[in-house]
Image (cartoon, rainbow, N blue to C red; front, side, top):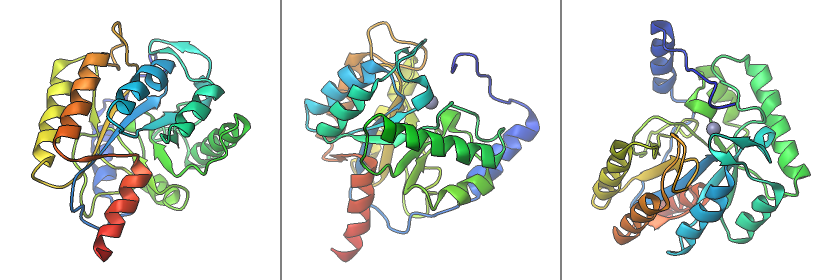
Length: 257
Ligand SMILES: [Zn+2]
């Protein structure tokens, strides 16, 4: 499903994406006083739930796994996808489960009502799979969204994560937070490492995202060694490696500190 996707590369689509990013639906109202780094996995394959989570657990880090329920149990280029027991194991280990739509649709191209109905199905199916913890996190499939959708999602989720590179701070759009992708390229790993190092002396809220974590990973995934190196680098900077919900709570708490 995700392999067949081609983003709209037309000029109007590029302009629309830029306008969408500029249009802030729900600004983060606090500045992080220290750095929070969220390691996250999209769709999500079993290798993320197994190997990815193990690498986080080695240093006591907590991550977020965005579940596309329609892909559950299927096999894609990113490998075998999660099953209900993975949701339970991750939750028991204090990792977070986020929403990622039922059908992995392009939310910028689909009608808004269709997107919201698809997200409702996603949330309902997570409950059907036994995940009864409230889901407050969302990631846009392909990072695609639009201005009015972002506003409409603000009442449904605390945070929606996008895919555009950047570090989040006061004023960042909680309905399209920036994130550093880890894919098959070395430049993606180097860019994430540079952002983590920069955050050591410049407090910010970082998201890192990838898909499969395997030696023979897809174009959208990474190796266990590359992920482990970044996780340990992040830990060594003194940043807190927490779930997005934990990061948000702590960033908001600091104003009262
Ligand atoms: Zn995805």
